[in-house]
Image (tube, rainbow, N blue to C red; front, side, top):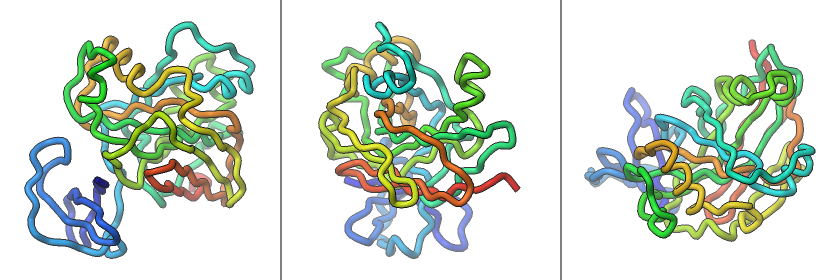
Length: 255
C-alpha cells in the first residue's frame, strides 16, 4: 500500500490517506497506528502532498556503498558509521532545497529511506522487518565544503530543507534489490541498486536499535551510491527508487 500525507485545501491540519491510482482514501490517525477511514476519496492532484513523516529523528548511514566510499577517498568502515539530521531538514516532493549562504558546494545524495512503524529497541536482525512500516525516497543533501572544513558532519547535513522525503511511503516492498538513481536537470548522475549496500536494511535497523530507541515515524537513510555531485540554484533534482516512485525538488538560492 502507498500511504500519503496531504493537506486538504482550506484546512490547517495534515491528514493521511491511502493512494490507489489517482485517488486518496483519507483516514483519521497515523498509518502505523489504528487508522479510521472516513469514507472520502479525493483526487491526488487536488491535494498538497506533504513529506510522508516528520520523524523524531533521522538516522543516516554513512559510507554504506563501497563505490561511494571510494569516490570520497575513504575505506569501507569496519562498523557502521551513523549520524543524525534534525527533523527541521525535512521537506516534501516539489518543495525547494534552499542553498545556505555558508556553503559554496552543496551536493545531492540519493538514498532509500526506511520508515519505522513500531517502538524498536535491541531488535534482532531476523525480527527487524516487524518494526519497519515502509520505504520512501530521500535526498541527503550535504554541504560538502563544510563537511571537510568541520571534520564532522553535523552542520553540513543539517540546514533547513536538506532532507527531501517522499512522495509517499510504500509498504509492500523488498528493499534488497531496488534500482536507485538520481537525475539533475534530467541527466543521470547516480545509478545503482540497493543490493550493492555493504550492510542491508534489516542489519542496519537492528544495529541502530541497539544504539538508540526507534519510534514510529522515525526515518533511517541507508546510504548513497557513487556519483554524488554539486547542485546550484536553478537545478531540479530527482531521486527515483524502483517500486516507490520519484522525489523531485527544485534548488533555489537563499533569499
